[in-house]
Length: 134
Image 1 (tube, one colour):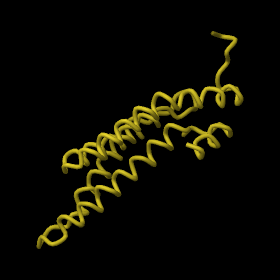
Image 2 (tube, rainbow, N blue to C red; image 1 turned 60 degrees about the vertical axis):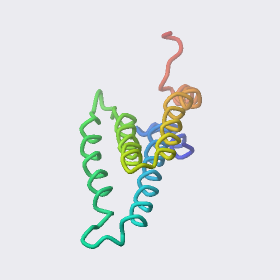
Image 3 (spheres, helix red, strand yellow; image 1 turned 180 degrees about the horizontal axis):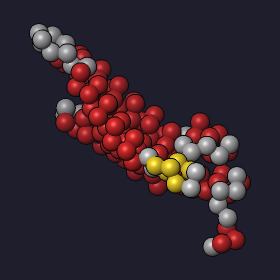
Image 4 (cartoon, one colour; image 1 turned 135 degrees about the vertical axis):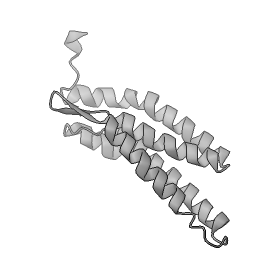
């Protein structure tokens, strides 16, 4: 989130929520992938890393489709990050790692709701939010 805060300060598109979601998604994918390798590596003819790799690529394609350029601004980055981390949560649940899925779900909810409290003052400082219009 600190990286995203810096990005907000210099008026870049991806802010605190997007950075936090992508980071959490990457962590979930790595944890599940590592657990899958440990669980399935002894099975002949099965490469357990191929399943997460294909999920990551597929959801990346869907996320890219949710990002659009509107009035010379990129929108949909947080949605794309949310889709990506949700795919990781689904993969965790699908492989039976329910505690990880639940913890990640709670963290995503907190990122999407609580981080607005921190982003608003930064957006105000950078002039992205004009309170005089409210």
